[in-house]
Length: 275
Length: 275
Image (tube, rainbow over all chains, first blue to last red; front, side, top):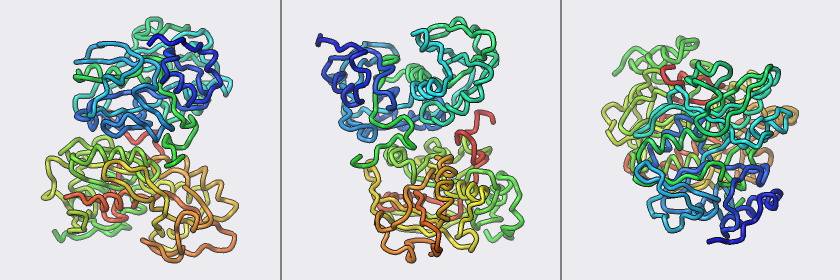
């Protein structure tokens, strides 16, 4: 299991399939930011079929934090609508395995945990619109500083489904006042990746006590002339899954995403049959 | 059951809630085109929970013909994410009830058929982007002629899920050559309503033998200087449901849609909690 690791820098510029092959071979187990640019990266939720209908309903009712970009057949580890030969048991750099609502282990392969009743749900992630912001000349501070985006619990209620409920988690990016409208417009074009912000300005208005004390990730300063802008965050479904106390549930480790063959600006996240 | 019917013209200009109230009271059982303009109208599929997970997977894999805009809890006839006090048993003008894959009856109320294991799936419909085309000065011929849009079976394969599979059904609208690009751009803004066209031009390329002989609806001429443009159609999921031979399945009658409170240009089709 301790294969020689390929450095992140050596994978930059490789195709999505080549990156997944390195991951599958056990030769890359680190974060996927900046890899296979232009391709959709996905948050993961793998759970028993008994809970899958309610979880899909939950995601469909909360599409901004939980944009569904793919769903597997029960017991089938392949995700053909997201890419050629994606095997969800091996093609993600790092997984978290939760049992009865508690973290049981972090692993780089779930082949030995896979069961015939598991369903994979892939959800969009913020890498997609961040790339678009940067490409449009709107800097993203945590990327510039090589930090993890600050994430905050809010008081914004989610629409429940079955045992899945809770409050939205958001990310915060400081944006120059004169670019806030552009940031809304640009990210709104990516509904499969959280879409437009859910709000801006006063953190207390959405139940955030202190922007300098994120619940996850690293604090970043909001400079003079900037506004804190809030986007729905993919940690939301992870939180909700944990609170639901499922006997078994597997997610990606934060930042260690599934890289799809689907282009991040494709009209839908489904590859055409045979495509 | 034979209440005095309110004429269509008298409901034009009424709110979505007022139109649904007339329908619920048994005072309107005709088509919903042109009613509650600006509000999302929905195709309906009501089916036993045992098939709901596969049907949601099918729709998620075929988002252009089957854009999910709402899904109920099992056994609960209310759809709070689509509107205030929507009761799916009474608030649609006309339903079709299918048993074992065959039409059993057409009714205006399904209260006596409702079961504790039924799940409602609401899907977007083409009224939404047609309104946007017309508002942008692109005439829609079947509307001008007071006809039903022509619909065609195609050879375009759908991505299967469980017992749900088949080929896409499309609608055809003739568009002036110099407006085709605009028609793509305008309808692409409504992914909850079939989005951009799936193709244009040669009908044979997608398996349509004769544009003058639609499988459903009325033929409309393609004039000189016009191109036939094809959009994914909400008859697709109805067809697929029929072919799946479910013991029970209920749809709206064609043209007799559920009218939601959600605005047709809203970023998501989910009303905020309490909204």
